[in-house]
Length: 278
Ligand SMILES: Nc1ncnc2c1ncn2[C@@H]1O[C@H](COP(=O)(O)OP(=O)(O)OP(=O)(O)O)[C@@H](O)[C@H]1O
Image (tube, rainbow, N blue to C red):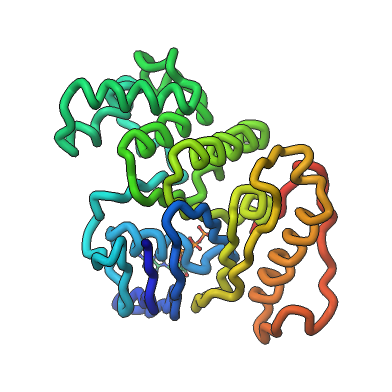
């Protein structure tokens, strides 16, 4: 449903050339929830901008439902980290969520239905008349998520959406994402540099190498579908999976990256609800 084929991106300016992404190829199946994790600066945001048609690749292509992405595709919604900048402060919560639906030229009755359903789904039915600046950071990010869901996208891309919220809010938002995914079955790619978050959320974790970036591993997360912060994160399988991701990223950051299993790597201990970030 979403094909990323041989994506390469070289940023060129007068005095500097940066090969941010070398060769990325993967496919997201319809209804899949995949996480993308990699070291800081490895090109995650670059890749997402290319996938959402905001940036042109140097070579390669992205296909959404067989159609080449050449500008923001109508069936795609993106949630960014900076919720503060993505909501309009002069519009109420309801108006913010409704705006893309107006641009989609939906009838008023359908817009009302979608706005109410999505605000209820993120637990903000009561806050529809508030302005974003009257809400906490976590609530603002819920509004941004509601806006994306109301749009009824075929694909939802999320670029480190919880990086700016506190740990408790982050855990709640992670559970919200899984609930919404179960409810709406939207194909989702969630970018994070938090290994625990990637394993907890995803059915699959794509691990990127250091820049210039390629896919280092594509890991199936065989944890039970019903997850909760306490039981899932303290299960032995969760610990094994996060150790594998950690090891891959650790090796990706060393200059002569060896394949997994070629040597011992000291792993951080899995503190309950702690996270490992890069
Ligand atoms: N507009 C640009 N011009 C030149 N170089 C850029 C530009 N945008 C990003 N880069 C470079 O491309 C590389 C990848 O950046 P990118 O922001 O995509 O990585 P990232 O994985 O999202 O980083 P982080 O995890 O720190 O947010 C970096 O070396 C960065 O300096």
